[in-house]
Image 1 (tube, rainbow, N blue to C red):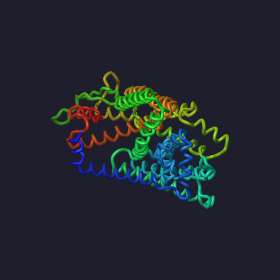
Image 2 (cartoon, rainbow, N blue to C red):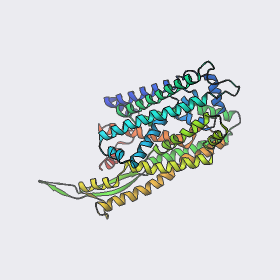
Image 3 (cartoon, rainbow, N blue to C red):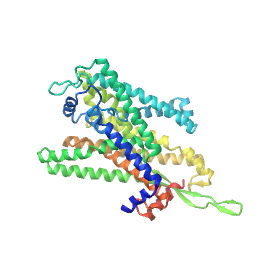
Image 4 (cartoon, one colour):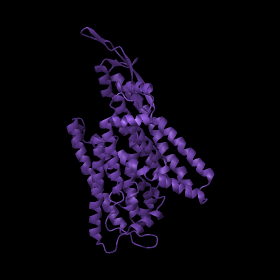
Length: 443
């Protein structure tokens, strides 16, 4: 491990990318402690303590506590994720957006621009709802959260500008990490927001055990469930279905090419951690708004959108399952894969090239995605139900563990790629890793 870390810092580009990513995450954590003007921090803190275990506490986890402190990053990156979902769904509906998606870099830049505009619009809507709702909030002792000297519309305008600017800045940070850092920028920001609260959650669990609210037997059961979830996530995220591919021999000049055997690796969970993040961002919009509006029927709806409740669990599982298929369809085009294989003289043994190959790949992808969707839905829904019954903090739930492990594996794989491309050993054994990488990159 120490030799691998030394190898990382021998590569100037990789070292600069890692240091840039770390600096962006540090800025993110600093911004998560800069409060929005006009807020009584102590009253807000007492209000969120009273809301522990609610939907507000759950989504506060994704912002690293920024929502609970109502800082400039209180909305996090959820508006950006929601805008990305909306644009991708509209791409399927509107031919204009579909044409843009097929125009290469120019089209993708245009779609990215629309996503940014959508992020700003959603941020304005969410920040307005929070500003209106928070004006009627009070701590359990009756202390108002908003400073009484603030003008109502002045506070709303200031909150909208502050929170929208914060989300826009996070969106820019995520894009900068993608271009100049290592890993997926948006996923890393969510990752950092979850990980930073883990020490506090551990201390809280120990205190619950010492006070007798959580027995040693129950704590042991929690640890076993966490280990089982981690094992399942790591196993499924690194599992592949390898389709054998044979290349026909071709003669060019005096040399013969092809005649090799390879494989097409397809992950069981091709969508990664994107489906639960998408599902969380969609549920975050109505759930966050209802949490700040003190109207009985609105509060009743918000009460059902709580992790562990049947309505929330059902919607979360259905959305996660749907986005598994949706995101996989965006990533993989069986017709394009079949055409590329045919162009280079490749074929699947027993399957005719062209249309039959595309149908076979589509069938395999559908079966893998069905299993991956069930796995993601179960991981994200089942553990929180047990943990909530035990009174365990939210970050020990399946969604948080999935995001943490998934993002960590993705980032490690990118570091591995940098090392292997420059003939350095990675985190795994040299021979096994290079053999695996060569198999995956041939197609």
